[in-house]
Image 1: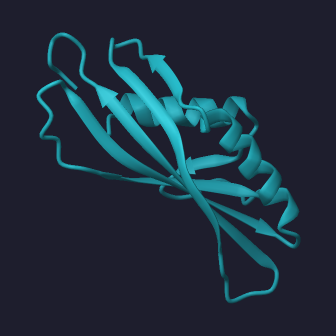
Image 2 (image 1 turned 180 degrees about the horizontal axis):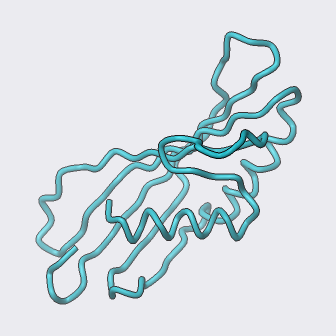
Length: 128
């Protein structure tokens, strides 16, 4: 996954009003918040395609309702495939894969995981 794509995902979520950070929350905690991470697959495609799985983990306090509402907002962004040509010329498609609640050991904290699939195509220069 490229830095450009990671930044673009952050921009999409920020514009939607989602409190998001990549890998670690460094700001004062604001519930609910979402942390992103990814797993990149080996690329054997000659067409310039690179694929990654992007995981968003939401954490909220008290009721699960606020997290569920934000989950629905995120799903509406990616459910039918988000398509974009990035400024570098790379093609990008992000689509929803799955979502599920994650049990916690505390009664107060609630968690939901959203899995997104990412496809990136290199530009004509072959660079990523």
